[in-house]
Image (cartoon, rainbow, N blue to C red; front, side, top):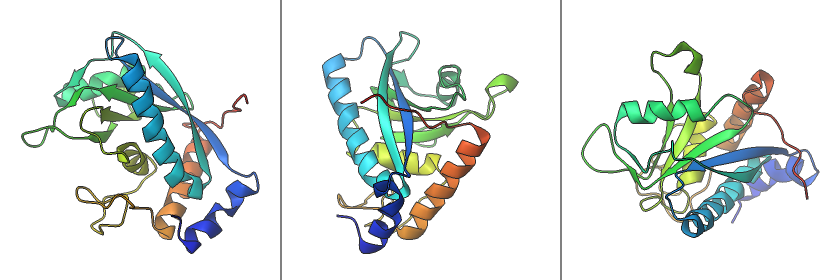
Length: 199
């Protein structure tokens, strides 16, 4: 349920001033299509429910490739995905079966990752990696919050709290404004481009 302050911020979208973006979801060809597609569409619906208040509507495009690994365990393996995430106006998300925590033992649900390797042509690329078996229903929304410039919070009802946020967590009005600022910067730089979606 959107709060009244969020509804006010939603007005530009209701009046037709929203921004439609393409989210390209990359996965291995060996990852089950039916399971992956249904899971991604559910994640996308939750992300759109959160980001609509910022005037953002995401549309999903699926891409499969054997170059996308089933498991991402190291920093280098996270960096290796940058070649598949060009700065081409789209958001890039990678779906894997296992995403290891590189700071401690165990696995994590998802991560917003910035390439910081030595290849100059890949610098500036950033993308989201999601673990299909481990992600919460709103993990994509949470990681896209990081993509647009939001940091972690501690309030249990806030989407950017991790771990331990409530199922009904949402973005605060000031966070929505920050997402809008991040979107404007990305559009100005052409890192993101509004896409005309065929109906």
